[in-house]
Image (cartoon, rainbow, N blue to C red; front, side, top):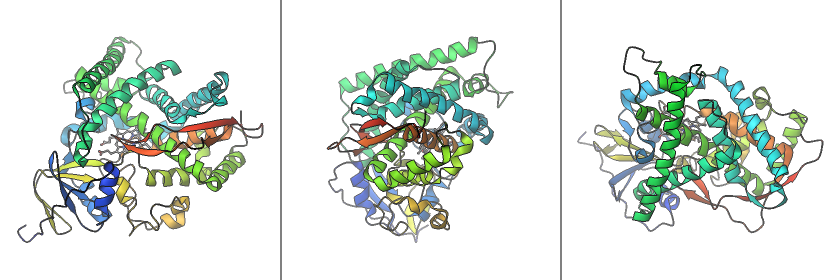
Length: 443
Ligand code: HEM
């Protein structure tokens, strides 16, 4: 590989946050870029062809950046171990499971929407982003672990989870030359919250092991290690890592996608009107089921466009096992490589007026022939999100039920800004008012 070009090291430009940092680098969009970070030299690829070279190759393996909280689960592992774990979890995500999961979503979402009336929450401005997280927490607990969480417990669990994820993020943000605000006090809080999460999860595991009639769910698959009968069962630590990974992967991401969608709909009343008209016309006031979703095409386009502009997983890190070549450049062995769905999905060669909200980009006509790695909210290749069909179903169903029953309006003067942590959160949440719609809408 001697004839390969060396990637020049970009000077570090002061940037207001990690997104702007990457945006600035991506402005040189057709090159493989490199810069110095607290973790050493980082390589950043942005062109869809180069992204494909990374995410499509077994040479680029996951880094342990989130392992401090998640351990070695499906999202942080790679190689043979990851492959086994993926095979183990796969049966939970077969297409035939989705209608049943949709009923779980509809039940919890319906209960939350009724609770808004009973608790009179909808009489005043409230943060809808946290409310969405409570439902996705309830849904993932029921769908994967057969646990019925009431709203209050979902709220408590969400609080400790938020601390764990927030306080893990600075370790990752240092990669983008953002100041790591890790103080001894925060470390103590992180330790306590991790302890609380571990208590919850180890109790779940112990309870399941004692249970005679075990439900057919992910926890049972993990506890019994059914995929490789001849080998050792998983240890409690291995099960803990997978449970926490699934809670993290399956709860915050979808809730964030819904919140960004509501934000964009709030800013684009024409799109909101089209989506609501479609919901009313297609559902006729009935609670939606999995089978109804294909008819809600306006909603689907809006949801997809929202994940283009604000992908919940906005960055991925990988490490090169061996020296490699990308676009004629040398990628050294052990190099840290990053890919950002946020910047690639705004690449001006692939997206016309990339910062404009335009759901029509996802019409069949406009989607035809699109570069497969120009749009990667769920990634693609071997590490493609295992929960993709689940998340698409859940996001659309929750939005449909919400907009069927309530008019959602952003609170005047409240500004929404992205907060790139382990996921692309909304800084300070999203304050809205919710007004109950007329009888023609839904019950
Ligand atoms: C809108 C919501 C979601 C988005 C945008 C999203 C995105 C992603 C992305 C980008 C990855 C790849 C991470 C990497 O390779 O470093 C991933 C992996 C994963 N996601 Fe999701 N996800 C979402 C929802 C879900 C849900 C609801 C579940 C579970 C029910 C889930 C389970 C997983 C799992 C298990 C992996 C690891 C896949 C593997 O490497 O085998 N995700 N997700």
